[in-house]
Length: 145
Image (cartoon, rainbow, N blue to C red; front, side, top):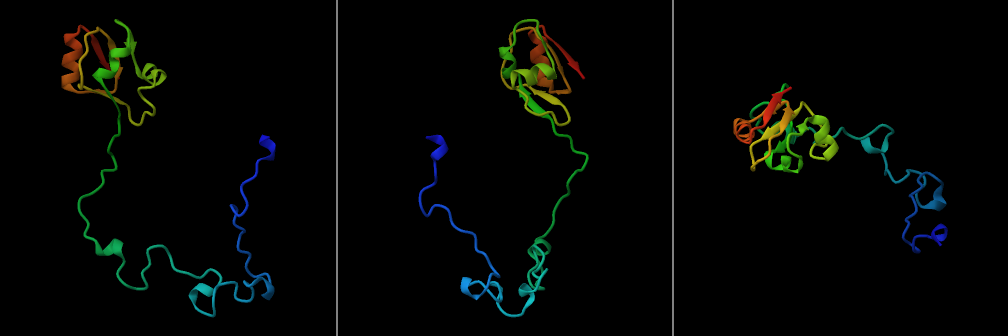
């Protein structure tokens, strides 16, 4: 029965209960040892601290920069548009509904990978020149949102 399922014996390890008296084996200093920074409450060092040695994050040379204004586009290919019927309108909502686009960051970009031979009306945020030429050759239209 599903309501009587239990893990096999010894599959679940008991939590170490510290500071519960000498009989437990984890009493008195509660597995922290005597004195020192790590024995105190709130003790220990911050992440990345190497005991005063120059930390790795500062030893490694830095190069380049991160552009904080960079835009991230959800990318689709022309070969993906083959599933749509002739003369249909393909916009962002349609692409999400079909499952070609999962998440829109700063928009949708259409790349020219593949071939298209149906006339479609496509509404996207960005498009490459090769994709634009292929769509126009197939007698389709492109609207940049």
